[in-house]
Picture 1 (cartoon, rainbow, N blue to C red):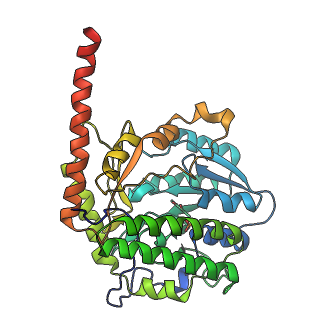
Picture 2 (cartoon, rainbow, N blue to C red):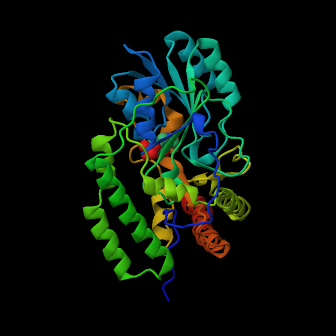
Picture 3 (cartoon, rainbow, N blue to C red):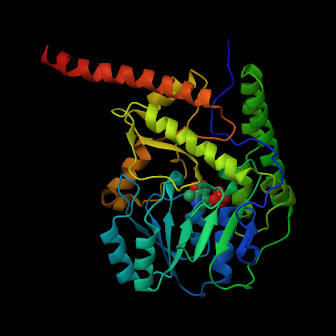
Amino acid sequence: MRAREISNDRSICLSRRSPGPFRDQERTEYFASGREALRSLIDSVLPTGKMTVLLPDYVPEGVIRPFRTAAWEVLLYPIDENLDPLWQRLEALLKARKPAIAVLIHYFGLAKDAGRFRALCNASGALMIEDLAHVLPGEGCEAGREGDYVLYSPTKTIGSPDGGILVRRHGAGMAFPKRKGSRAHTTYVVQQLLLLCVATLGRRFTAGRWLRLLRRLSGRFLNSYETLSSYSHEPHQMSDIGRFLLRHADWDGWARRRLDHASAYDRGLDGKIFKRVPGSFFPNGGPFGFPVMVDDRDDLQEHLAARGIRGLTLDGRWDFIPQEERQEHPGALAVLRKHFLFPTDQHLADGQIQTVIAAANDWAALRNRSQIAAPVAAVA
Ligand SMILES: Cc1ncc(COP(=O)(O)O)c(C=O)c1O
């Protein structure tokens, strides 16, 4: 019998009204997306003229594009396979190139050393953005204490059609340009809502041909990413429906559920085949997914897909390393090739996480066997 799909897809869920994590309204700006928040920051706060930004070499389009469209010079600092900055290279770039701003990404919800990053930025006079797009902050979550600006992207963790939240430490009362609405933004919100409805149906009902058909149609007609790209150079404020859904999210409970899922993977997955990324998640910060590094990732994904399980890889719009510089970025290239995110999501039951672990370990057992068999065959 077919079961329900297991995936990271966000779906709509209404919880009791809660104050949520962004209570200091004075310092919180709500945009329609993370990239619009960055664009508004660039336009409002930072001095005009030829400016430089320092970004990690494993970076999403949503972070690099606002700087590029504002005609900033973009420098990439290298990370290693553990998703940490190569600290000496970072320091050297900060000193030599004096960027106006540097960005630290807490990839997949893993807590990176923001204090160390802050100290290096202070020493060179750069502003620091802490990117927490992959974190669902629960009550008392300590993430984002170091950055001058802290970025959240709730569409990645909460079933909201739009949203990019910028928390600022300085410049209280400063105006951040944003439009109230436009046809393109409305189209984006409607497309995103329809996609959320498809995902919500997929969670509630047993998967089957109807879902595949609905997905195919929505893939064809609901290209919300293209819509977002068409207008995001002009920042918009978050929609009312998005704000409503944020107010009715169970931030604390969902953060805990995601962390519980991550712990279950940590305990249950075969450690030989699925390499953990060292470090930990933020206490009470729900992770976007549970990251591992794995060889032959496509084969794993096929194996899981045949069992109704979808994980995630963030590689499609994450590679902006120029061709001629690629040998200087082995860490990011390895991450692009090998990372895989097991689904953590507030809507998934513990039993479903165990199903994923069992399916992944079945695949790992096959790999272990073939690795043992390979040298024997070579000798024969
Ligand atoms: C780490 C990270 N930061 C920022 C962004 C940009 O957010 P948005 O998609 O809301 O523009 C993304 C999007 O992929 C992201 O993954």
